[in-house]
Image (tube, rainbow, N blue to C red; front, side, top):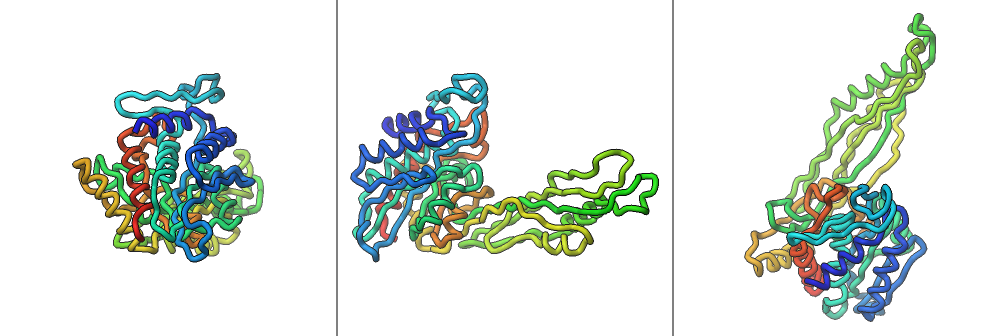
Length: 372
């Protein structure tokens, strides 16, 4: 446990909100020093390591996946001015505090140790991957996938702790995606004293917004777990001055998607003259299609909890998009399991429990060694 906590602190101390290079260097150096795996660094900065049946074309492959980029730290989380300088790391009351402990360098450290220590069954290729650019839309994962990264199964080490009940690390079998869109309304400008001479783009946008409010959000069921989407207009921007009929107005829509389902925003745009749907971001949802994999992972997680006298974890769903969405879209059966608890990631008091990090290490090791 001390080694894992020390490795977590080392990774967390390295700034990686603007440039992930130094954090990737530390991960790569540790893997080369601590394992006999084939370690690679791709053009995007992703760190990949391969062990086990790497020369067997018929081997099944299992990846332990994380990311080493973080969101910008709060000023109090660095030793320099603003967000410059080394990150501050503190260990107290059984937790490690600092930017990236929860999201997700703590779980990356647990996956690194599990990758080193696990003895996978014959015929399995065990892979470790830490991606860049997860926080900005999965840039690293998409680069790796485009270059041929295609494990059969993956455990993505995003947060799953305290989901079904306090004190447990659950197994996530599905999560929502996010589509960020704009309903762009165009009209015709005119002097506001003669509104009939123009076409008010704000009115057209309002008609489209009414259409959004009337939409049903999609739902899905994954391995017996219900996943519901959501839909909200979050920004309205139109008009330039008080005495001109506006010729343009935009309504920004935050849509949380589910496996296999989107809200019919295209239909809303088509129903209102002068309105166009523009999709700015589409982070895919994830659904595990391998029930045996999900059940085996849950068995491992329950055994780890039982050894410590803890309540049993469950198969659950997650509201946030992760790199598991990109991997699932490319054909990998994914699960999410990690140390981060709701309310920890991206905060100025971000932290992770040392005990939970050790729990994740044992879960990852057990899954890597389990016949699937």
